[in-house]
Image 1 (tube, rainbow, N blue to C red):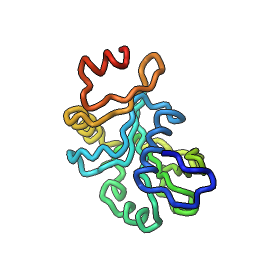
Image 2 (cartoon, rainbow, N blue to C red):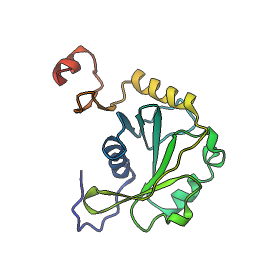
Image 3 (cartoon, rainbow, N blue to C red):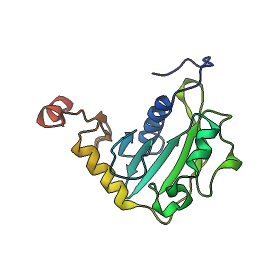
Image 4 (cartoon, rainbow, N blue to C red):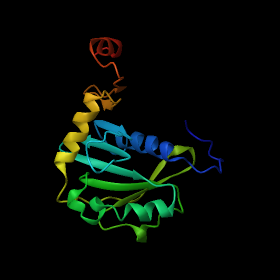
Length: 174
């Protein structure tokens, strides 16, 4: 649900996650994206994560500076090699996180009125990534049938529903 450009109501965490998922599928050119997977199989619970080619893009949504500061103390932030995402970003509304507050290599996305996303700072490549956690997360999402957003080879965006068997494929025409 997109807000009106004149809205002064702060966005919820869920809204930021959904915007991050759309950004991953669009501007970040990911083929698969998941918002708030909530699969308790890894220590890290990403707000949104996307996969493209042989890499991944993690997005953490923050609604307050206190939330951001608490996030910096998590073990996979203190030890970046334990974290997910070849590229990593924070997403928030302007005024929450300043570029100077960011950890090394992290990018920053600001959500503008109307749900548009502006890249304030591009995330830089992390040499060490917890690929095992990423695979566990994807496997768990498939196992519990968490809806995934998938960009097909034909360039159409589809969402796999919880019943993503033959009926869903027929319905989507794939």
